[in-house]
Image (cartoon, rainbow over all chains, first blue to last red; front, side, top):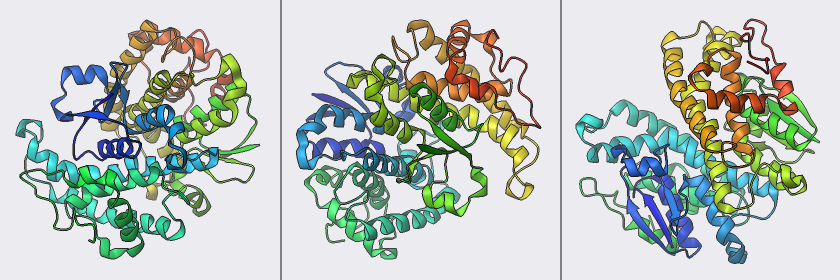
Length: 230
Length: 230
């Protein structure tokens, strides 16, 4: 049994939730608010980042990429055709490149800003940086997302799935981060039909349902967030 | 034969150089200056980051963590006891956590600032941001490195090597990033004897020699940079 410390609007946490659902891994989810810097949490993960996965009181597995490798190494072999990591070293490198692209670069340039400004700041006390969103930061994120969506569209137009002929961790990483922006109505889907059609495919998977049910009271989702025919 | 696009003072590039030397992998090294944003380079790696590894005209392997997995997957099995990635999923997770710690977090909080301000800005044209180092940025890096060195010291005091009983990729990642700061005389070694002794051990390995020979004309190394008994 896995115990997963996460936040519903952390893209990296969503990535691991999707992965567990795709691999049929049962997990207990515990919400962690990283800005609390809870002592017990920092002992598990001194970097203070989400998610953290613990299996049967074993050592903490910290961060989305480390969790991906761990879950694939311990469960991937049993998945056959549904394994989310290809077998060949070169194609594995492409999956990992894109996972990093979405969870580090897209996060740093788009989703991190949007979630921080529009969700976390609602939950954070003022003394820790809570309050109104900073419109300059939102403007930067809105400009950056157009470039990123174009790149998703380019990948979706030239390959069946983002990293190649089969669905992989790269698709889950991209979908996880886009879904946070989509909740906030910040994805300009009309800009790119290839990106939209790829997202519609992955959004309709059963693994996605729990994410589509996530809600934050003070910030309701965009009208099409949970709509499979958006 | 590998072709590796790198910069002598990019910590992530040094990490891959160390890894290749430890694994006995022959490579042709090509210096890339990422601020040039060379078109052919961006086609290989749209993120524009170093290093990029190409094997026999195969697809580009982008970034230090992706290169680590690729080189270990293609060469690690033949290394026996000298493999730098342990066998067990949980200990592999600890190695990967620390590799990310040093190549992402330490880089973002310390080495990235130091190298940008004191080396890259010497090489960059003024129009692209070249010029004098920004003392505020240097001050932040100098404050941050003390916390990081303490963490290295804590790991070195409680384990034989940073991730456990054997030398792993985690040691190479830490040494790669510390070596850049050390070249600039920016590591307060007197603060932590455990960290210093660990670094002396890894610095004396043959794989380290090419790094100790790196020089940049306008910025000579600190007096103890290449000294094994610093």
